[in-house]
Length: 106
Image 1 (cartoon, rainbow, N blue to C red):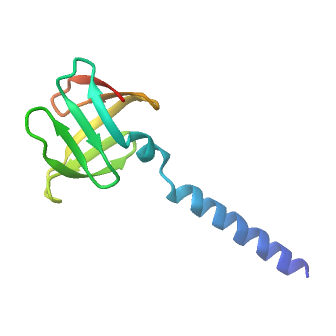
Image 2 (cartoon, rainbow, N blue to C red):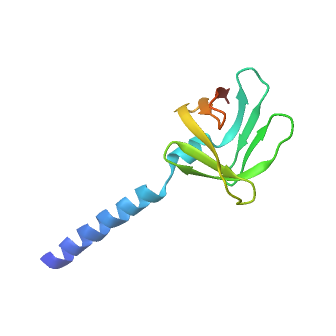
């Protein structure tokens, strides 16, 4: 009986760790329509797409690695990297590939 309880505890802990590791709260905070502070750039982030509308909107694939958003057009490399400097529910500050930080709000 003691072996079953110990096995159950290990399986329950492993399942809890797996659930926490597979969830990505940062990605869900990023999703939505963002507008730059000066209103010139609109950023739309969905579950599968990243599009920045600064004249022409091109939907790109993206993934998140640490505090960096890597985008690519149809999976092609090299990736365009955007560094998230600060983020909350209604504010986003991204540093683009040209090392210029842009502030967005929802």
